[in-house]
Amino acid sequence: MYIAITGRETNLALAELEAVFGQIASLSKEVVGIELENLSYERLEHIGFTKKFAQTVKESVSLDVLANEIANAMLGDTEGTSKLSFGISWYCNKPANRRSYLDLAKKVKKQIQAHNRSARFIQPKEDFALNAAQIHYNNLFKKGCEIILYGNAYQPSIAITRWAFNPSLYSHRDYDRPARSAKVGMFPPKLAQVLINLASPKHTDIICDPFCGSGVVLQEGMYAGYNVVGSDNSEDMVVASQKNLDWFSKEFHPKNTFVLSQGDARNFTAPKSSFVVVSEGYLGPGLSEKPNHALLQPITTNLEKLYLDFFKCLVVQPNKPRAIVITLPFWQTTTGISYLNVIDQITDLGYTIRQFNSVNSAQLLYRRSQQIVGRQVLVVELKKTN
Ligand SMILES: C[S@@+](CC[C@H](N)C(=O)[O-])C[C@H]1O[C@@H](n2cnc3c(N)ncnc32)[C@H](O)[C@@H]1O
Image (cartoon, rainbow, N blue to C red):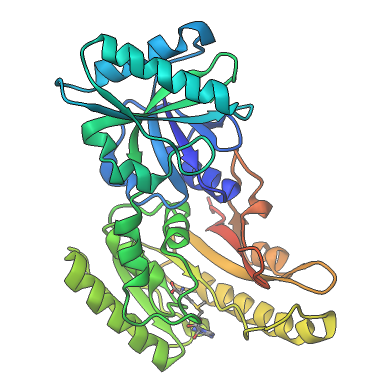
């Protein structure tokens, strides 16, 4: 069995893992079990909201033999006689106790030394788990390993990390894009990856973003190996996408192509071949403080009309999208959270909202604390007609 350690956006992470792997089991807040023969590392690089994938080597180990079992797992997994660097990350159902945690690390080190190998324990920077940067910085996939303990704190299961999010590769794709300002740059590539995965595109599908902005979805679509088509009603944003995707093509040499044009999403023209729509839609005018009902009402009326017109336009296309994944804005107002009221009208048009086993589809929300506007993720398919 493999496990995934999710980031803090648990609901979106679960939906994404379910869309990619099918059957998954939520084992605890951050730990998800996935039955797999083996991991496709190429695929993992494109999963947005999972921090680590690990392979279970021993389940439900009693505490008195835990150090021994961890040392055996590490020795069996690392070849050679060179110094073995290791970390122990605790994801059990009860918080770790500092003393017993350090005691365990000491015992593991001793056990490894008893096998004539020197060992170096890497202390987590935060709490009791290594962060992804520490794993890469200490070269743990080559010079040792990260052990993950999960499940019952009195009888933990042992897993070895096989993949971890690579912050430096990621930040290059995020912060080094040339057309990036605080205003247009707040849509993280990780979220774009999640949206793409939720659309479950086939290898040959085109990814279309009719609100392409500065091209984050398009970039991550190309990064994952898809041809992409983007449009935006603002000429400036089409220019920004062009700059960013030219830069991305130079830096990453993707095999795939992008096509951009200026146009209104309400007049969207579908490509002739199989495609999915993936987009962070228009969020409305920027707000500097929490809106009250009177301020928000005209904004939501306009946006509801925009999105309904967009869905109406899609439904009459001769070539229909296989899936539509779009984020709609929601707001923290002076009195609570306010959503767009469009779901019923969208389903009346002949669309269905995809349901997930692991999470309620109405709870696929993304909002940074302090942000006034958040994104509600809709995963929509056309009703099958017989
Ligand atoms: C939040 S941004 C989209 C970000 C983008 N999806 C990405 O991946 O970077 C929203 C964009 O929608 C565009 N927009 C607003 N109304 C539109 C419309 N009616 N048709 C097409 N684009 C529109 C805005 O110009 C803006 O660039």
